[in-house]
Length: 213
Ligand code: E4P
Image 1: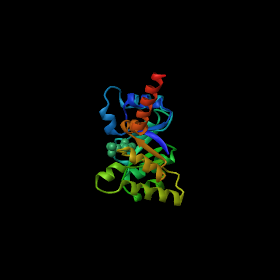
Image 2 (image 1 turned 180 degrees about the vertical axis):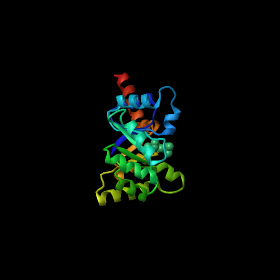
Image 3 (image 1 turned 120 degrees about the horizontal axis):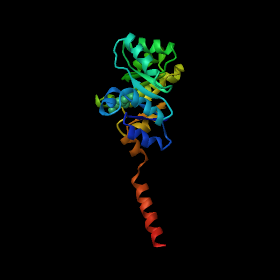
Image 4 (image 1 turned 90 degrees about the horizontal axis):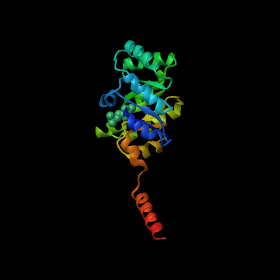
């Protein structure tokens, strides 16, 4: 399973780019709005200069025709840009049209296996089920992800599934266990994934023993 970072924060992206484990970035309008300074285009292009992999940038339009127009414009900003499209009827139409033009898409805000099935049929390059938000509703996000992975496997869809709306490290492990292609993970959770109290205690003990030599 590939690891993406879910942020528009340039400092966070620059920091993880040095680890050699993050192969893509997802952003959304809420994440973009949290960042001050550079405009949308400059931010996306800077992200692309830090991470050599797919970088999702979301359209703001809600009508298919405008989504396609916006997607075509954004796709010209960098060859690694992926156009993030909300999973609606207009979104399906836009995904289909953009796929016909060989423009990569990421169908976002997926909460059911049927939504994933439909965006895969429409030709989405990526599809993003929002695991944490499903859990927030008292339902089982990981069960929905597992259903999606089974369907993708049985029918051999090429759409890659991004486990999104990750809240904690267990979500990452479970996403890998059910076979998600990618997990897109907040910076805080990526940092938590590498930490273990026994690793810290082990280092401290080694340093103490070495000092006594
Ligand atoms: C995915 O592409 C989204 O940007 C993201 O995972 C949403 O997560 P949230 O539910 O924490 O906002």
